[in-house]
Length: 451
Image (cartoon, rainbow, N blue to C red; front, top):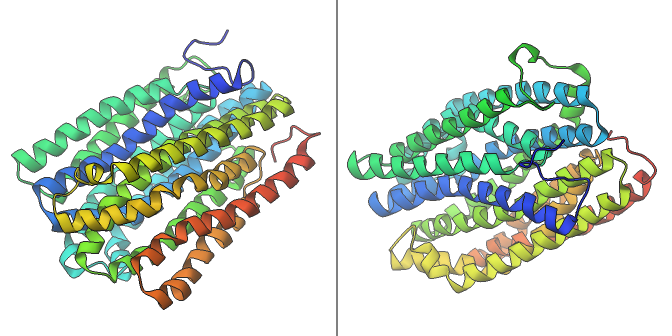
């Protein structure tokens, strides 16, 4: 008998269940964004524009590595949901224990890389001399929380695959409240700066990791985490790597391409850099709200495909695409209308506000286009296809962006020529991803095999 905390994925109304599934996940994603936004808001308000620029200069680099962890955790979600849908109890147990170990190892490796090469990467990004010391300090402290982030993302993915998105929301709510309280304590009371907000972030990350790990240890279902069963199963590891590694590489290369964009932004005045840093907080806000429906697409399609419910599998894709598009459209328009109020959370400098509002005006009308790309990628991966979608993204949204920076931006040398590349790259990639998904869907209609 299903527990009430789990939303049924293979039965009932898809329109209703996808919303019930996605809303807690959306709030969870937004709380994760608020961790970083709280850092930026507190440091920008109480430590000044230089500290704001230091933290803002690390955003893309932090996103690069956390996106690798998200790619790995997406593999845990796909495999767990597939085996749950197929009723393969042994497959579920092996997936949970194998993917948990791999995610933890990845988190530790990223911690080490951040400590050893953080300053080098920031230097290669042409981070301003006045900002780099603060950026390095923030980065080294923040990366101490990567193992915790890996554990939380893994646990969240497994619970989501089972239809449980409510408990992770509760855990992040507690962690988010702690993060904001510690931000204010360390920066306002103890007069710390970027180091204070970084320490607050990692403490809250470890709290959320402990809470979700405790839940999985006490779980009574097949996806319970049993310490004695922690080992890497070769077959599951192969499937996990086949799905998670391309996703992680895609996310990493995607963010690597964004490093070229940040380098272009850094070629402008510090005011432009700081305005861009403040406005990029909106990116994570919108992307992560939309990402709730991408996760729903993966979980619903994977379970229904495992259960052999092909029509319901395809309907899940279209419904999630619709929801994610509307979310991006509405949030983007709201950010355009209330851009000044939003940016005032991070800075009161009128010149920085002006530069940030300019970015939000362009991006606010662009966010919704990314739904066609990202939701379709999730749909392809839910069918066990990860390599080709990764190649398409690398070519359409990564290589294209680098070429844009060396051609269009190099010619015009305007900040608007940087901001406009996003919508062009999303459109190009979305067209190719939809064509590929249509092909594999026609080929997979007579099979429930994942890989």
